Image (tube, rainbow, N blue to C red; front, side, top):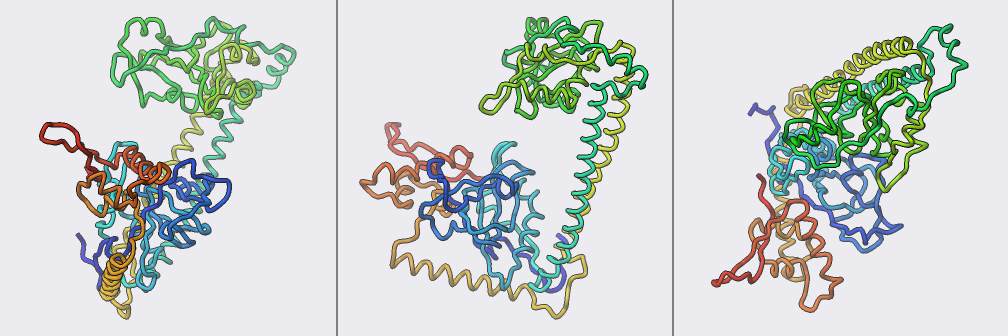
Length: 515
């Protein structure tokens, strides 16, 4: 661990701040008016819709403009992170901490930067599966950060704000370049469908020729297997997710070893795979199987085998063109969350059918254009990655005192930390006095178990939650709702308590330790 500059001190998040967890809401509690409920998606995507709540709410769950929030549950790389709340008064949902500290000693924007610099550490010590993980309150509170004097915190914050603005502008320009590449790809595929990639005199020769329906130029259209696949096996089963940007993606594969399935649904070079079921935006995407490896195809795909009149690549380019995408949009049947295009509707799609020689000229032009666009897109994506790495190094240098932001006249952070710790101790003493003379403010199930850090009987937990003898089902339901949420999210351990005869007499509970 590198030495800190003069005036800096190492501390933990829990030493300089208190952590208030959000409230668990049932869908039945949402309303058409009231305060917005801040969920993790609202922190990561400002355009995400809000649920509203108009009922009573504890003061500790209220969020005001400028509060520092930390999402501690979700998918690594997308969900975790600290954010300054820029909206109006709102209510905090579960799985988010409101990080409260004294602004006279801690700059919240600096603390946000410091916390986000520890995200890799947070994710590493989170528990749960690969897709959904959780950071415990104890582990988060014990996370170490380097704390400079308050004046230097503000200087670092301002220095990094300028860099952050430059990075944001650069990312905006890179996003615009990606959008331009996508537009160029769509124009190229449109030109393939319109035959404008052919010389003018050749194109004029086809002007009077009628378009053909797919049914007139193919020999077979068949649905894939509906059998259950496995994570291992002899032959890959291509699914809708394996069609990406007009090509087959051979990652995230499932397999089969069933010889009947392999024989019936085996693919041959030149088979065109059409995605018949997917989201409204993605249904209809198409790719050509080129024999990369033996494979079969799943039921959400239609295998199309071309006759001698049409080249597989030409057909796929036409289906992926703006004209083909618009046709899919018009003929799809929409379900609750997915859309479907059956083989009859696919067979009715009409397209120009020049000679095979001219189709090959179009295919060659499209391939060359797509290859150039792929190179350009690759450069843009690498530039975006390098930009993030550069900014991360700048932040790391700033948060370790290596950006020449120090001033010998600053009050040492150790004195600020001492005042914070003394104030926190006084608050805890005042809370104990308050709770012995009056009823303690209600706590969530998570907060009760997190404070205990040990097994607790279900009866004791219910009593601590505030459930009294004779409580109505409506009064008990919030307690069980929180338990269900904790168990669903993998945060809760439940163990049966047995008597001497081995019969279950009760249950005890605790939060799951990090793995």
